Structure formats: structure tokens, C-alpha cells
Image 1 (cartoon, one colour):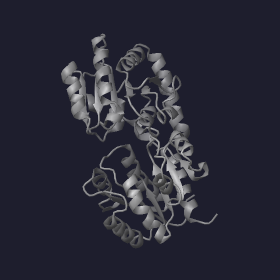
Image 2: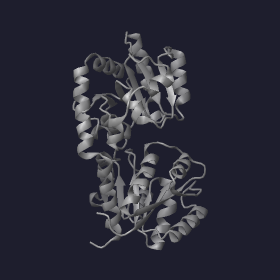
Image 3: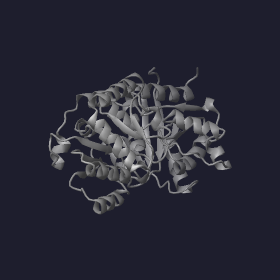
Image 4: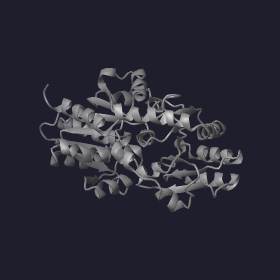
Length: 368
């Protein structure tokens, strides 16, 4: 579909670096080869700024601390004019409220991205930002789209574009690096969760499930890969419940394909609805069996008894039982992993995502 060159401004006011923020920089990098040149505006000193600059992406630091911030709006207007921006893609609330009105004044089409599944507020401001202040809404899953439709956003305005995966890097990855770094014996089963250490990802639930599994006689070791504000809570769970020698906190790592290659099972103990989880797609790509909670968004790729074992949210006992069961039944684990791998191959690769995003950008700018 590659055609004339386009210029896109991404805005992101989040202070974190998780799946949402990594998707932005991934898209910016990958679409450049298709003639879509991207610029990022994010809050000063946030991890996404460092990540984008490390990748050589054009990045501006803009305050974006509250809605309709005059200083931020003035800076965003200068950026849009300087780079002759063709489309704005606003990824969060504060940046959306700062950037969308400016884009409207300059005649720049607006996409309001929605990466999370919790319902938007049923109020005038939400109806404005998802209504007259944007030309399209981009969600990262069909569950998020359905939630917006229930709040009155027209379905014709919403496009679902899950984050795509570069499968090749996960297929080619070799095990050993994570175990070696953490002193985990090569022969023991290793069960891990790879996600930001944030309460809604349930890292404390994972830690408690790991303790239960060990107490019930499992020889598995467990690892949480990622960092974030819930680390202190997890450390408290480990201090109170014990077995910290076999439940490791690996911190933030970039070698996720190699991390997954070391795992026998992948777990995501989310406690809220969300978009399609990149961690689950990555585990599927690496052919690692998945255990996840029943959540809107997750259920699009962690499909119960088809591509994943699913358990109730906030239930460490049920999670521990699922872990023990799949470790004891490798043929069932293999069946789930094979189906998950096929799911990504057939609909969730990076190329699938890029095709949809390019079509969305060009459809807003170029005549039919």
C-alpha cells in the first residue's frame, strides 16, 4: 500500500514504559519503511523519551501534565507546523486533550487511540474527545471496541488494531541466558510472568500462586520479569510467605525472546480488562503454553481451552492448580502452545498491524 510520504505525530502522557509505550515506538520505527515518518511528543524525563531517542526517533519533551494546558498546546502547535503533520495519533487522556484541539484548528485529522478496556466515562467530555474532537478511534482489541460502542461511540468510527509481533525473533531465540543470570538450574521447570510490575497485572497474585505450588510439592522455579510500582508489594508477599530462593524478581529486561525460551509456562495474572496483551502474543510466538485470567481483551488471544488455560482473576489457588496441572500434562501444554502459535501466525504478526495502521493513516489523508 506504500504511497506518498506522510507525517504522523504521536502524543503520549504516560509516565511508564509498558506494552502501550513500546507499541508506539515499534510502530514509528517499522512504518518509516512504508513512507510514514513519525514524531513523538511525550512528558519530560519519561522512559518512552529515552527509549525513542535510543532508537533514533524524533522526540520532543512536552509537559502534558493536565488537560488543555496552554504551554503544551502551544508547543504541540509548533511541532505540527514544523513537521507538517498529516495525522495526529493521541494515545492518552491528557495528551489527547492538549493535542486534539490544536490539530482541529490546524486542520489535521485526529486518531484517539484506546489501549485499555475499562469503560470510558459516560459524560460530555468523553463524548467530545471520542466524538467531534477525533476522526477515528483506534483500539487494540475488539473487546475495547465493543465497550466504546456500548458508550455510544459509532462502530463505523472505530478500528481495532492489535499490536503485532515479530515472530522470527521468538522462533529463533535460544534458552539459557535468564537461568544463568539468576542462578536457576537448567533442569528444573521455570514458570514466569513477563509484564510491568503494576497492580492490575497481578504480580502479587502470581507470587502467592508460586508459593502455593511450591508448598504443594512442585519442583518448579518461578520468575517475574519486569519492574514497576508493585515491586514493593511483591517483595512483601515473598517476605511473608517464604520460598524467595525459588521465586525470582528479574527486573526489566530487553531480551524477551531469550527469556521466553527459558520458560516452561507463561502466566499473566491480570486483574482488569485490557487490550490484547503483547506478552501473551509473544509467548504464543515462542510456543510457550499460556495460563491467563478471564478478562476482556485477554480472551481474544488467551482463548479458554483453545490457546490457553484460563482461571478466575485474583485467585492464587486456582492459578497454582492450573500451573501444577499443565506441568504434569505436557501433551496438553503442547496442544495449547501449538494453537497459540498458529493464532499469531494467522492474524497477529507485525505485518498485520502495519497493514492496518497504514490503511488507517492513508485513509484519513488521501482521497479514495
